[in-house]
Length: 233
Image (cartoon, rainbow, N blue to C red):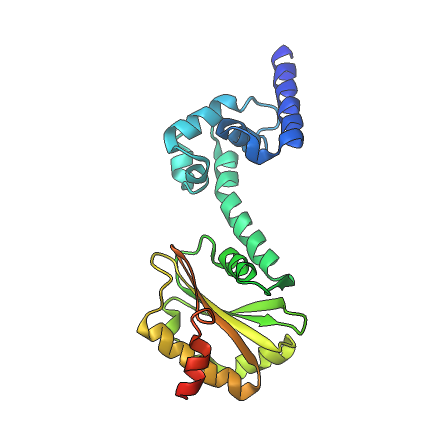
């Protein structure tokens, strides 16, 4: 009974500390301890937190570790291992859902934040179109292709219907280079030119084409490539 009271008091102190300074200001051990409390109702999690950090090196590496490897750590049972592997998936769903809300696209920083959240953690190339309303807010986005997205031709009927459904007056397209530079390839540029013609035929303003890579973001608008592409056609 005495040990349970000590552990309970430690948890209360940890929660109080989080409320006071914020989770981001805790040590790695304290953060992992707090994560582990979700699967350990009363057990002291300090020793397990230390073991996880010692074996895997960091919080992000713990969260990215496979279930089987987590099970090798003493004190980590089936429930805890599954809970840890679920967390990155939950974060991904959260970020995607958050990106679907109405957010400003008035600055290049707004645009980068929006798309970097969409592509965060993805290991394959994904091509999306984001719909913008008359108030310059992102209304929604749709995934158009997975894999080698630039080789996939758009289903123009489906895209047109989606533009009408989302009441979009303008669009921004984007795709990621998950393991490379944000600099566009020739194929990226050719695909972009085709999109310029397509959106112009619909009377929809093509605001920008974005590539998110390991080294940041490439904006076709910032390089004045939209005007160039329309002149080429």
